[in-house]
Length: 311
Image (cartoon, rainbow, N blue to C red):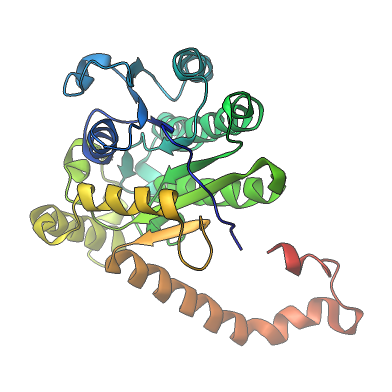
């Protein structure tokens, strides 16, 4: 169970992917907050951040999260300016959709460099700062958030490499958060919004060339791509990025009533419904295969006995 967290006054928020969409909504909200938050806004080009005020409380940085060197330099710039990082929003990313057999190795590796390695490297840097630097100026600890989707727990046809990155970060955050000493007061959270009213499905989604073998109507990728086209035309029914930001900031500021900063935060009924449906299917399948699973060790028990408490 996650624990409570108290956000310090004048907290420093480091947000990636702030040129548009959810990242921009975070930057606009935080830079105008009456609470005096300080903002590190990162994008591939600082020219995309002209909408932000030129203020001593706003630091605009050029950052390609696929570059480990650029990440270290950006974090160092943030420390030079503000001395600490209290909240990291890992938001930079895009979608790669299409038939797995038609996806090139280069396309797959590039999406992993951004959605997995970039986010993982930035998370580790933030944890180091929250442990070693934040205490020098008062409050210990911080919050690291990965902006994911229900695709981190439920894979759909037509995006196996994209979903693999989301699943990978899910495992990375779940494992990493359990390594952290509670005294450090550092909290990791995966936000899982459903459809959000942005241009992400058009501007930040790459669809590979189709593989002729998968054009058959019985292949489910065709259905998924068709539903995405419908979603693009029906985004007026989706939640707004401003509402998403409001909820995430509220959780960081106050925690959830029961668990403080949760490891996972589904957002939207579409996200909750997809995750719940998948979990129910997994539990049902577990019950059906128990007789086969039990045959592996039988009465000898399990080699993983005692690990359940860490789940």
